[in-house]
Image 1 (cartoon, rainbow, N blue to C red):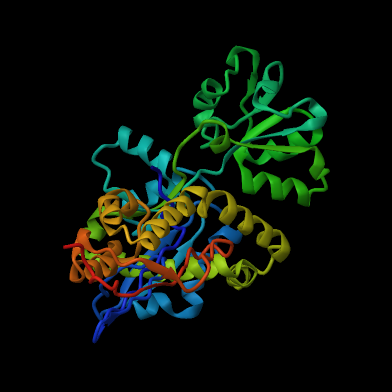
Image 2 (image 1 turned 90 degrees about the vertical axis):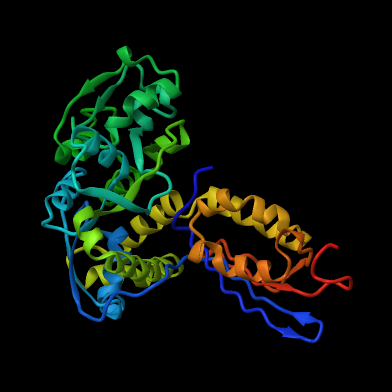
Length: 386
């Protein structure tokens, strides 16, 4: 099962014995352990795009001091290409960055010794999309037959075109591919010079809307909804830097995850961190762009399904099933690898524990926090089966 690394799950457990009673509070979210050394470490971080709303969780820790609290001196740079961040980090000019995981795989296939690795999946689903106009006769993937598609040669979305074609039964020979420059895709689609383009969903939809294109005429076919089952963007690191400063990498991720949680809860406020670095961007536009990314790429149905399945087992007191499914659930990156729960249930009998859980709060999925509080009482016959 594909897991949402960023549909934050945090486990906070506190168990104690008081006569016949033990209790535990369970909150599902993300975190990492251990802190970096006291000496401040320089981290040059590269984005994969210009400053936009989705950059908020990387910029927020600069304002909140969360990077500093981890002993890091972080600077954030921008770029406009899918492969440029990978080359930057591989060269050592930048210690860390965010990049398309599939572009990274392709890069490493061509450069197997390149000192760059992914350490954290940010986008559980990629933003690759085919964007068309209803007025040009496009509503579903098959409608692309007989039409003109504008796509840059190095476009990360166009790189998945063969998968998209096969998954949707499209006769690729009937689609005229016009290789265009990245900067002219939107104007050409707006002017009707092409019928559709490939690109990132959150980029084109918001930009076309801003340019006055009737939004009811825009069709965004996210490839992830049409058979292209891939991950999206990931945080990458120079392996030499990671080997020399593993604590710095963990510290960066801790600060980022705090910011990501805050961004998901309050995207409008998070965008203000981006505005501090570029006051020329349009606030409302970037709020909409960020909300699209959170909804379509970060907080995903897989994360909620995994959490709900776990909650049902805990409510039933089926700790044996929880433990049996641990490896699968761990793919969703629970805080501390779910160690808090493992310690608690280990003290109460492990798979033999049969204490049913009682929810003290509703599962907060709408806010993207993935939180729930669960209380465990000692069963009359004891914590464990005989």
